[in-house]
Image: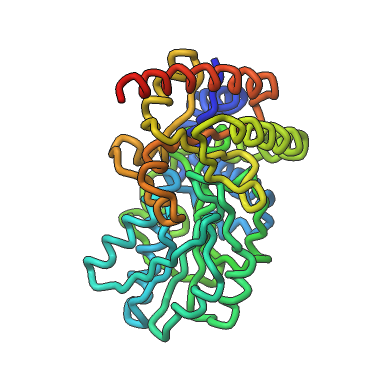
Length: 383
């Protein structure tokens, strides 16, 4: 089996699974309980929080544990909207955000907020000039993803942060879900106020995530009740999930140092080989993209047809974002980049991890050539 769908989710590390079982069996007490067992669990969570903070080079009290990227993005955006609606009702984002940002902004529009969706160029990047022109005295938040989940395009986060230093009342949120562990990001250096990551994208467990919130930034909680997570997210803490999130982040950070060059080499090989095939349009520009995502179209085929054909060969890739692939809508990201509807219809995504090898890449190319040849023969016959 060749698993090239790591942007949808990654296989949990064995050490993560072992830590989850041990934590669940031994440290099962409620961390809010006053007794010794509760205190032990509370200490364990605090240690995990400090470990995450050290990796991100931030303070421990700026780390909040969530259920994943979707909750983190909702908390960052809606929390800002609720907190600062009296100051302004304008939010700026992009036309290619993940659905958990895009749909959240659409919901806020229904509640009276004004949302500006910045356009992107053919590579999928925004222009800083467009962002500057969109800012008004009512703007309270700019939300821009670090790495696009479909094409891998990296946004100019540092430049955005530098621009926003001139607007101290505007918060800066970054969806770092696809970039975490693959593309370095300096949270302090980029002037980021809110930053979201998800554990299952870096070999942690589903249902766990992290929201960074700068210490002097105030946002309104979405989940109210108890006083967990520094009054920001009520609900009994998922101790095993929190511990394994920190563990997975430590492990994958170590893998980055050892294997990032190999990952880039594999990505470049795949793009070079795929580009030589007939009827192929590549939508990922490696110059401005993360090292683990490749988006391309077999023009004339539907993306899901190619996905299922490769599945028969025990090779697993995806169409667009796994979160929206079953809607069968054309990729909003690709259309925003100027890709034709015909090409967008055939788009698929390869997404790698540090676990993938060059041998897998070579096997993939061989199988892809044969599969495309067979599929285009069928399409030709049907015509």
